[in-house]
Length: 119
Length: 119
Image (tube, rainbow over all chains, first blue to last red; front, side):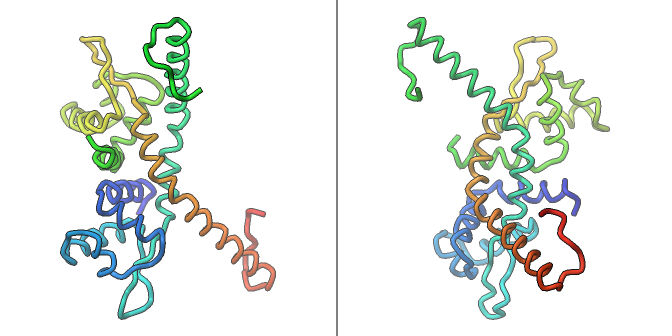
């Protein structure tokens, strides 16, 4: 996969609450498919489908135990995704600063009705 | 939209190279639909479809100029997405440290054939 294809696969895998919850579960340790299925009102085939999407993105790998085949988190694709998003940090932080300045100005001139909570 | 639905929409919007390129373009300033379509070998309707996905995720907003309707980046959803991914930073950094330690060990014992570039 090219870096762009890896980002496509990672972001697509993250665009689902069940898959994000599976990753959150695996962050605290490896788990078998039935253990992963447990907290969800979902059939094992439905969970397996989600696991396949996560595996294709390289976000999970299967352990060596042939019987249980425990799934493990591989966070490396998340590091790449974070690297892409981080380029925009300057922009969102500048926006927050502008908002802060605006709230300060409103407070100073008495135009705001509420005090800002963050000082 | 709930926070989970916002994450779904943001990650789905980011799972496409054209949409990521549109956001990169808008990071350097507002642009009209035809300006956005220019660098891509794509019809304006195809670009409009991508813009709709980005708009639904709140990643772009339409400017006030009724004629040009320039699109602007709104990085706030990216801040939320970064917040979700950041929870896993400890995990990927621990992995990199383990890899570093392994490379050090290989160098020390002469098991590695190449020197690591990062000291």
